[in-house]
Image (cartoon, rainbow, N blue to C red; front, side):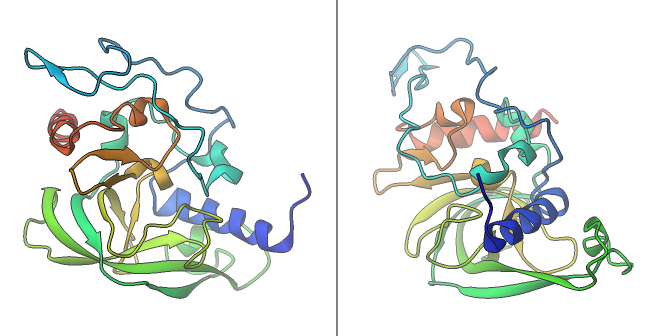
Length: 236
């Protein structure tokens, strides 16, 4: 596939954000879904039976829009909630309260002492790319500072376009697994879409990723995901 200049900038930006912000690391290009199994689960059930959770082992991931697909080899090969939460600084449930704004993030060619800028290994001097930043009103903190009421959430790309990362939508509620930017006062989801679950009006959840292990919570109650996330983070 021939990449446009815009796609090239998106990929380069993703590598920077992925390595330094979202908790990703360079991978081998292998799709993390291929070798994932979900032990002790019953196919397609979304309820509980005698207190035992029956996960959704046949989620519909084919219709999901994955904005970070261009660089899936640089997403963490997430195989469990424990692995997802390992890099998390904050896990919250919140609502996107605004349309957001486009913020251009500038990086140097590694000459700066700024540790985030130093992630960019090039000789091109100053480099910049777009991020979409939105305000999140926090309803519940599952892990992290319990006093937080609002945060700024940053995604790769521009508002209204899923290139780079599938964007969250205004007035929609999500569960966020987040990593704080070491330089700027913003947060990004761990491993792009894999750190995001949409929560509907009936408190049913849906992963924004196509990762089968994470999508096994699709159509399940929010409480089930919350309980499992708390256990996963506590086990660290």
